[in-house]
Image (cartoon, rainbow, N blue to C red):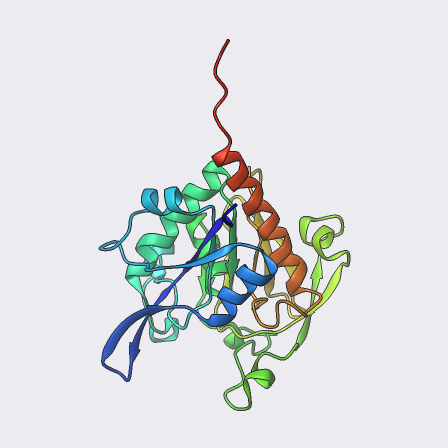
Length: 258
């Protein structure tokens, strides 16, 4: 039997500063394939190519990936400033309604970094443009220098709510994670439950209250070293389990009334 399909949200890039491309990191595909046990499929996030309904018909779950471009502040009712960085309005146009539709129907979603922020915005929340400028907050951005291993090294604890869904996934109330983000949650959406915090109070783990499906999202990057890391692996395993359940239910023959 074929593996269930996870749509991996792609991003717009310019190769050699001139050739437009839609792509995602190989580590996202590796985590979905090797740990979640699903078929990774890169989604071009532009409404001129795809619609929300087409994507939900084609896929069994979605991984909302990290990206350099940020969610446009107009999506949460604020004016654009230089601190908000660069944007990808085409991605906003696909991912925000896609998140809401998946939450409503119970299709599994897993948000990472920008994807974590997208989930909050899609559900009515807002973002800070730059965490490190807030009093008492740490610099959560990716180190500018060093090897890839050094940039993704584990840098701070995340403390989780006792008996919450993340604590149940990890079997621990405190986990050690990497951190590579500039923005963060300002106001959580009405149904967004913050289930984990960094030592400086930055929200790091969320889920959607009363959602019928898997909605766990994290501010860090669990796709790095997902097969070997004791925090990343159970997250992608739990996501994969939810996707397999969704796919099995979708493919099951409808019962015929007697």
